[in-house]
Length: 481
Image (cartoon, rainbow, N blue to C red; front, side, top):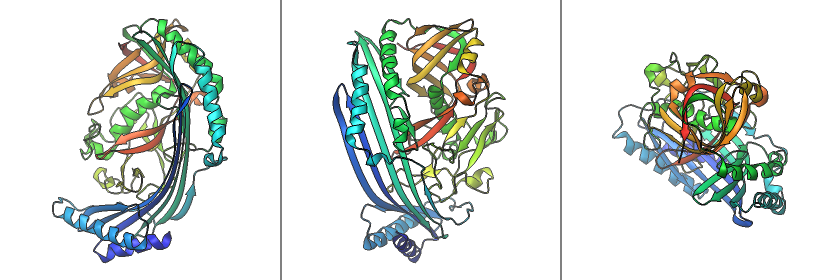
């Protein structure tokens, strides 16, 4: 592969590029989906291709192909330079890349069991066992369970001398039960909604997660929600479980922090950001106990890697420290806009045929102390909610509304009756400023988000968000009909 990457770089320079990089990517994916006792999806996909990115006359050019041959690489390199030169006729400012050391390295996801070598029969046996437990009650009309496995083998080379080989391996699984009684429809999921939990691990993740052990509980809670009362309406203290809080972090901290979104360069998909550069480094984003860390090095995070697609080494840093906003998510192109001399390592592309853009890495709310039981015992009048059902946030990431699968009222320190369709809403900084308690490390875990969308045309990316159950004071809650 090194010969092919050098061929691409030489061809790009020959045609006038002042900078060039090439990413060759070989990817494998397996998706297994069981619904109501039947295999709905069984996909095994394999793809290989390359993308060449260049700077010529101060502008970017990009081209890609799925034909990995010497003649095709030369053709695509020339095309990328031609695109850059055409773009340069309309440019306002020349592209500037922040400095980054030259890297020669190999990085691989740590894992114990290669999921692609595990027999399909073993995987199906587990999914069908879960499915059978979920469907033991006639009120469960839809039972769904799935597994997903990805491997991505990357080679990145640049005209600056960097050559990096990476292998990323990710595994995911989960299930849900949908109970129906006339127009009343309720869903419970495990370990999280929308496909379950995802880790940068091998099949040991599947073996180490109590899927079967939680299937009966999930079924019974879905059925119980049919007759549960609606969530109360009003203002109360809200305790949010880690899985739901992960999505809250994603939508109201992660996306607003992407510098291209802040600058208005990304608006077609999910809007811009209220977190404008005049607020940088002194904005009171949350209460003093709110510490948000971006970390592309944390074990098992699906936004963990050795290097991003700019060839920048993975990093860990505070985005919010003691409630104050400290750092945007940046790439080599835009770091200088906010006075940074180095990229924060957030440039990633969806596959070989898309140009990299700023994407979230793993972003986590740091734990403080105590357990969920202690937090509930310390709450006089509140609501505890778990697992996302629906969500909405405005085009500047300020006003939001989330509905969860399930909630429980809290009265005088005790977890009381179950309620259905709990919904809460707020304004991003006011909400995070109201955070007055975060559980400790024993309650903290990473939650994988495998399908974050961004860009036009749209791209998908993966990341994880660490969270422990946390309490927010005087939040407006209600019921989604």
